Amino acid sequence: MMNMKKLFTFGLLAAFSFAQAEERPNIVVFLGDDMGWGDSGTYGNDLIQTPNMDKLASQGVKLMQCYSACGVCSPSRSAILTGRTPYRNGVWRHLSGNGPAHLREEEITYPELLKEAGYATCHVGKWHLLSKQQFGSEDFPHPDAHGFEHWMATHNNAAPSHKNPNNFVLNGEPVGETEGYSAQLVAAEAGRWLKEIRDKDKPFVMSVWLHEPHSPIATDTRFQKLYEGHENAKYMGNITQLDHALGMVMDALDEEGVADETFFYFSSDNGPVPSYGGSSGGLRGNKRSDYEGEFGCRESCVGRVESRPAQPARCL
Image 1 (cartoon, rainbow, N blue to C red):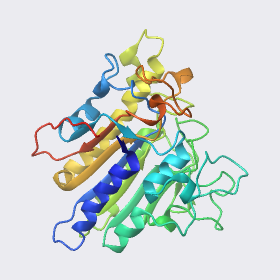
Image 2 (image 1 turned 120 degrees about the horizontal axis):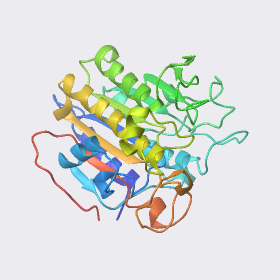
Image 3 (image 1 turned 90 degrees about the vertical axis):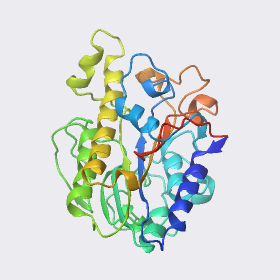
Image 4 (image 1 turned 30 degrees about the vertical axis):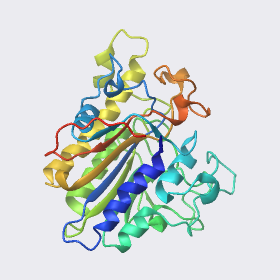
């Protein structure tokens, strides 16, 4: 069995090994939020439609045992960025309000290392590596202090709702009210950076951290109506909404002609919340537990190499 941060570190080591080479791989780290093992067609759900996740898995490696570093989002994400366990990197709990914990500026992150190696860097979506009162304060490190040249983020959830949120911050400046749903807004900014902003003479590393399907769930009717009549239609549509955003980023890579040169990693940050509609697919436990349904066997796909056939694999 492999910890998610260890697997990702292996991928980064591969990138570093090519740091001085003429052709260096791009890297995209795409996270869902509170998505369970049982929440996708790719991993066996008979009803939820996830065509883009299916496509990604068919073009790369579909991981069957890949473990989060913690049972809740802030520590899990800190481990991905640093490659260190939460108790070592200082983010050992969910970061809400009033607490002093945050991802310290002195922690070494992979965007910092890749930036030094000549990569363009970008983060879009949820951040949640500062306590609530620290987000927006110049006294605390934000994504730019951890190696991201361009960033658009929220502290935790998009607010007041994942529909038409008003709390995104772009490179330190509040964006104001935006029209649309969080997943598509985040994916659109990722596409804008890829097409209009990045230095195209450099390889790039980009993190796309969606809010979906974390509560409060807000689902576009075009996705919810796919499950009309089902008692869990709002949540199921939210997963398809997430999958659509995944497809937007994959399409942007295709349009830029860089898909074949990109290491694309998709995962959830931790397990599901059944009271909001999520499913661990029969595994024991959910978000915040210490059982398999929280930490392991989560939707994790690595791939995006068009020339390779499907390579289903077991991560042991």
